[in-house]
Length: 130
Image 1 (cartoon, rainbow, N blue to C red):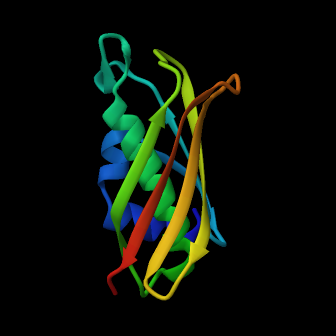
Image 2: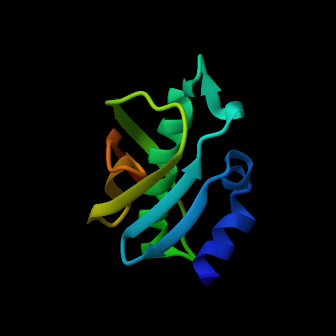
């Protein structure tokens, strides 16, 4: 396991609670995967809050890759565009930090199904707090 991944799972147990599987984190990029399970659904479809959290977490990890282990950041703005309802399977999320300022990080993310269907997109701004 990548050292940054271990640090993040130790600091943010929420990832494990939701079943987020951090696949990669490096150089302003991050990739998560998640298996859709009944506990994460509403009316048979993955809950929008889970997707928003996936976008937020993936963007945050892209920023964290630039400042961990000594720095940290928190989301100050999050925008999510929901494009397609999904009821089963595995989702893949990828994020990239598109601008890293002294204190603010700008990140963008996309979430796809295993078949390549785009489920949602999003962007976030994070504030360096350490």
